[in-house]
Length: 76
Image (cartoon, rainbow, N blue to C red; front, side):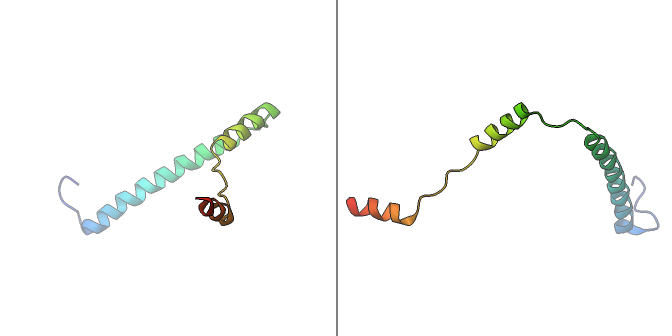
C-alpha cells in the first residue's frame, strides 16, 4: 500500500486485504473451536449448582399484574 493501489484499484486492493484477513481469522477460529470442543469432561453436580445459582442471581423479577397496581392506587 506504500506505492498506491496497484493494477486492481483502491477497492480491489482493499478487498484483497480484507478477504485475506477474514480467511486467516476464520482458519484460526476453526482451530480454536475444535480444540475447545474436544474436551470430554462432563459437569459435576457441584458445577451445575454453581451455574444455576449464578443464573438465578441475575434473573430479573417478574412484573406484578396490573390489578396489583390498580388496587394500590385506589388505596391512596
